[in-house]
Image (cartoon, rainbow, N blue to C red; front, side):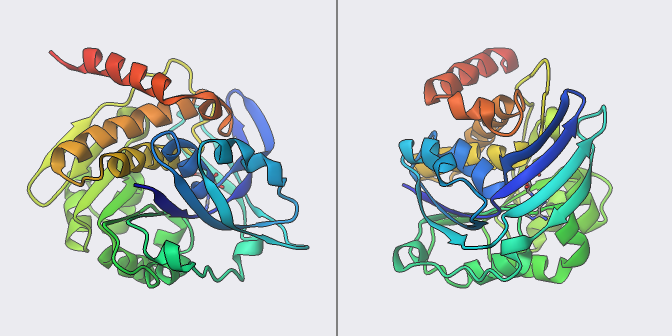
Amino acid sequence: MSIVVFGSIAFDDVVTRHGTVLNAYGGSALYFTAAASLFVPVDMVGVVGDDFPPDELDFLKKRGVTVDGVKVVEGGKTFRWACEYENDMNKRKTTRLELNVFKDFNPILSGSRRKAQYMFIGNIDPDLQLGVLEQLESPECIAADTIECYLKDKPDQFREVLKRIDVLFINDSEARLFTGEHTIISAARALLDCGPEYVIIKKGEHGSLLVSKDMFFTAPAYPVMDVVDPTGAGDSFAGGAMGYIARMHSLDWQTLKTAVVYGGVAASFLVEGFSYEKLKKVTLKDVEKRMSDFRSMTSY
Ligand code: AMP
């Protein structure tokens, strides 16, 4: 099964304790696709300006990704974002956000994309997320992610998104912020009450939590000695998890549990380099090797 993804495609400026990178390729759709395409074909929908080099997506095409849903706006500027990480890499501050070509973008899905079985909507304005959700016909599974600024600026629109999705990916601080709950398990329950069947809470280097109405699963993160740049870890986590779900073509509990471990392994490669430089070189065989290491590290 393939996945259609809609989300940001960006130039990022990132400062971490390892240094600074400017104009790094990023955005939720790119990071998601870099991970999900290890498992299944991915069809990307998004927008860039003519400042975005077309051959940058070639490595994705080689992995079976369709990129003709990425619109190029002549004379337009690609979305830009900048952030600085604290020494504790789970904490960061956004220092710049320019929507640019996303400001006037109205994503229209083609006929085959409307019939997508698996759809992932990455962190982007919830009004745009809703615009895409409204076009879908009868998907097997719709998953979405978000980012802090939209929970503060557009909580009502995000609530509408929640009513229409099956799986929510969200990080722990965002889950607390949106629900006002103090523990992440109560925040997950409050989010389930808003609509999704499954809520997956990402906890950075502390792993993830998968929650349904009556089930609960916790997974540690794959241990990484030196985190170079965590930007996109959440998106590549979602890419690994959704890639596995679409490959198995199943949304049962066992598949979901395994999927969050795959998500963590995909993110573990991503954080070892700036942007997606490391993830770009990874193969499914490398992922399976870490999955097997993870099994021996966590079983007793
Ligand atoms: P993550 O580290 O997984 O939360 O994702 C970071 C990526 O999301 C970066 O590559 C950014 O370009 C992108 N991003 C950051 N803020 C936004 C936003 N407000 N809307 C869309 N994408 C964003």
